[in-house]
Length: 254
Image (cartoon, rainbow, N blue to C red; front, top):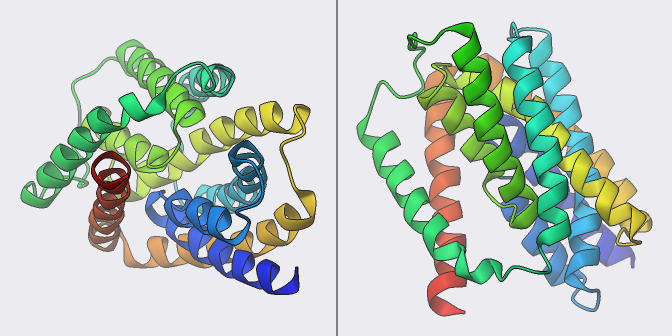
C-alpha cells in the first residue's frame, strides 16, 4: 500500500499543479489512479479522485481570489447550473454510453487547439458587447452544458470552462482560469456528493492525495499569476493537446 500511495501522491501533486493553471489535471490523476489501483471498480476510482481534485481546486481558487476581481453575477449563474447539471450527469452516466460521445469531443478539442494556436489574440482581454443580463444567461447556459459533461465524462472540463470564459465572455487567461476554478469547485462537489453517498470513495487514498494536490495547486496558481497570460496560453495549448491524445486513444485505439 505504501508504494501505491507514493505513486498516487506524486500524480496528485502534478495534477494539482496543472489544474491550477489551465485545468485538465484529471487527465493525469484519473488514469494514474486507474493504473495503480486496477482491482477497484471505475466508479470507486472516479469517486476517490474527486476529493483531491476538489481540495486542490479550492486552494487554487483562494490563491486567485486574492489577486483577481471576480464577476459574481456571472459566477453565481454558472456555478448553480454547472453544479446541478454535474449531479444529473453523474446520475445518468450509467445509462448512456459515453464512448459514443467521445468522437464528438475529440473533434471539438482539435478545433479548439487549432483556433487557439493560430489566434494569437486569444486569451487577451476582449470586451464583449453583451448586456449584464445576456452575460449571466450565457454563463448559465454554458455552465449547464459543461457541468453535465463533467458529471458524464469529465476530462477537459477545466479547459472547456476557460474556453467559454475567454471566447464567449471576453475574459483574459488569468481571469478565465480564476473563474473556472470556482465553477470547478461546484462540479466536483456535486459529483463527490453522488459518489460518496453511494460508497464510491477510498478515503485511505483520497485524503493523502488531497494534501499533495493542494500543494501542487498552490504552486501552480502562484506560477500562473506570476507569469501571466502568455505563459497560461502556452500551457493551455499543451493541456488541450494532451486531452486530444487521450480522447484519440479512447476513440481510435481502444
